[in-house]
Image 1: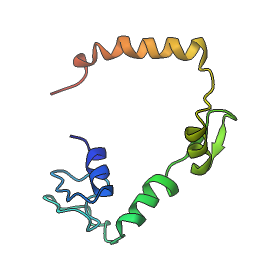
Image 2: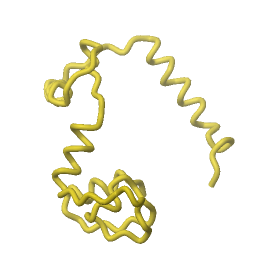
Image 3: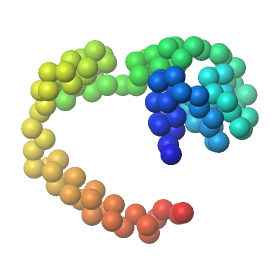
Length: 110
């Protein structure tokens, strides 16, 4: 399980009990098993946390104009289905990542 799964469960109204301290723990929205960092004293509502995580904090990049953009532009791109042609360099990089992924056991523990 990942912290993203827990965050998505929160968004869907499911009770979440993290065993570690993911980014959404310690704000009063989960049943925490570990003590959250002392600086997590705020008690945002779920909508406020979702806004911070999906709108305020991230930097979005428009693949068409190749410029930073607001989240609304990204949503519009997803709705319209317009995507740039990634080209040969991108395809080669994806293949190279696949090759390295097969050897991940060499540098990952567990």
